[in-house]
Amino acid sequence: MSKNLQIVDSKAAVVGEYTLPDNCFELEKGSQAVHECVVGFLAEQRAGTACTKTRGEVRGGGAKPFRQKGTGRARAGSNRNPIWTGGGVVFGPKPRSYAKKINKKVRKLALKRAFSERIEEGSVIVLDKIEFADGKTKNAKALLDALKVDCNALIVVPEYTESIIKATGNVDNVVLRSAASVNVYELLRFSKLIFTKDSLDILVKRMG
Image (tube, rainbow, N blue to C red; front, side, top):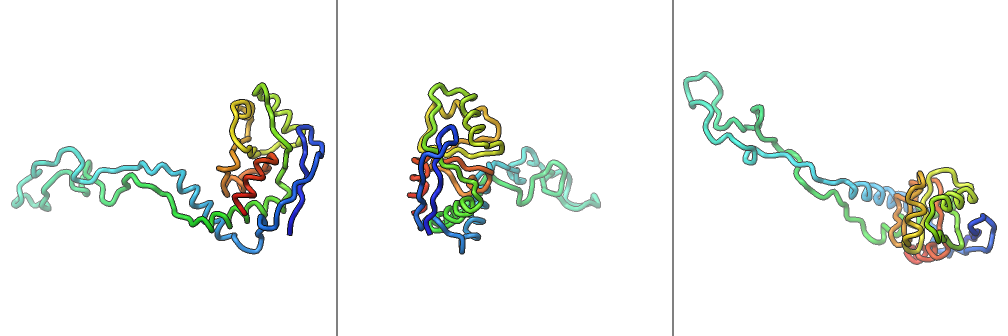
């Protein structure tokens, strides 16, 4: 079923309606797809730079530490053996990528499911446009106050502009994203999602 959302201006006055098409809603399936996308996104954020040295990479250990027989000790060929202090590490971490492959259809389904849930919660606000001509933080705060947004919020715009980046950059608990890059994790993470009409058009096209 299609759903209508109110479009408001910077003073929170209703100026129109936005009709979301049927193909943007999915509440019957997709919970597993959402889980996979969130896990995949968080995995991709890992640096994967942890690195340990094997016995062949640790400096030293070239000479046999003591003779083979007659000492009463277990034979040893190197003091960089993994069981010695200062020795190498067995099966330790090496630089790697933690990225997970997720199919396009699964990503689209997850995007639909996450967006549909936020619509049902009433967490989506649609603005006719966002303009901060002077790029001042107080104007961004005034907009949030007018919309009665006092929690963590995601502002989604069609494309980044210098004035919008400056205006929102120092506002606590507010993150700016373009409609082309917003992902499932971000749709779920924030208490309020603020879209412009144009950015919602782009997201709808991605889900269609």
